[in-house]
Length: 110
Image (cartoon, one colour):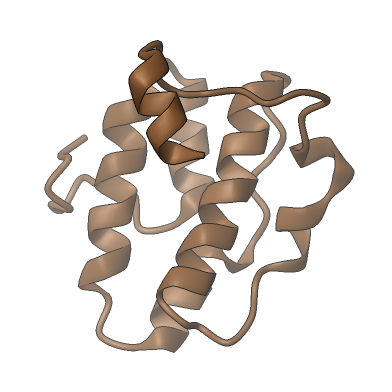
């Protein structure tokens, strides 16, 4: 997977999750997806890439991260709507999780 949004980067978030489930590194795959998302020429293309719900992986953190990513991209890029699946209770964690181990970074991001 190319993190620069190349031809092998996933075009759809659901494809990214399939690649991760097949063993690809989630940080590389999701970065490639976001790059591809940003290369889309219209908001309809962008929304289309997050519209369909990726399957749940059984990894609660990854499932929550994917929902949060879809919501973030939709709001940050002002797509006008968030995919309904992003708010599904299966995509929420019971307690906060930080993607970094650095306490300084965690404090700066809250």
